[in-house]
Image (tube, rainbow, N blue to C red; front, side):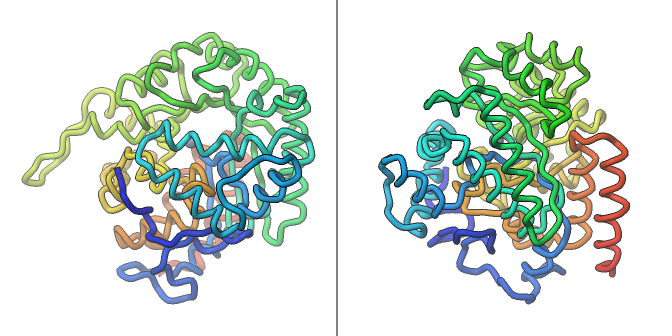
Length: 391
Ligand SMILES: [Zn+2]
């Protein structure tokens, strides 16, 4: 539970990718205190993002324009105030309350034109933030309110990503994950939709929504279907709910990755007087099998899954060499960017170039891209850029 937003207040998000709000952020080249990187360095470095929601990353100005066009009422009338409202509402401390903010973003994403625009701006914003590869997810079933078919939703978003990437100043590639809502009953249909578009830019599948009461095993048919299709999927698990959710996602459903998975620390005993932490069988399995954790520091603080950035289990999981990746979750609700997340970690833990490189390569190793394409990004884009920064 947090009273203030993790990066401080006031927090607003300008209409393009920009330094995350947060009063103390050095936006210039000055090193972050205790770290060997500046915020500008982090933005310049190639980064990889695996967990980002399309309906959680709209520009406030775009929400306003789209809402105005359809007569949808919003709680604020200018971009800065609306951006602040989203962050404050998402700061309430519960996952259920956090999800309420999506009523507004989803409401303005019900036409092909709006989906295309939001996707194009997403790709442009990620490119401007130095993201070279992203997997962006959304639930097609939430965008049918004005009569679109699932296929029309998917094609509008794919076209938007392509257009946004093509027009961006820096190279970015965006893959799509199709999400099914865990409280609904359309997961098999969405899984089949994802497989149908696998050669057009859909690289994986996911389930999302409130965890409590909706275990991943409700969607076992969909996961078994995806496995038979040799397709990839991640599952939101271990965010608002603990170890049973993670265990089901891996051992019953066969998830390739864990969306969040931060509660795996419940299976790690840390001696009070120092010494070597003891991993339980599930935590040991996750680490042994190199199962990627899609950690989202600011989002976890907002939903109460972590008390603060400084207290976030990412430090322990990093030190224990889990396959940790750093992600944004919802850039609008978090008032953040991927660079902003790394800056928060640099401030909290003194992490710099070597950690940024490690997290980036971890993310590429875990991406739902073919192996040769991941390797090409690592060898031709990431390693050369970080080698130039080596100390
Ligand atoms: Zn998420």
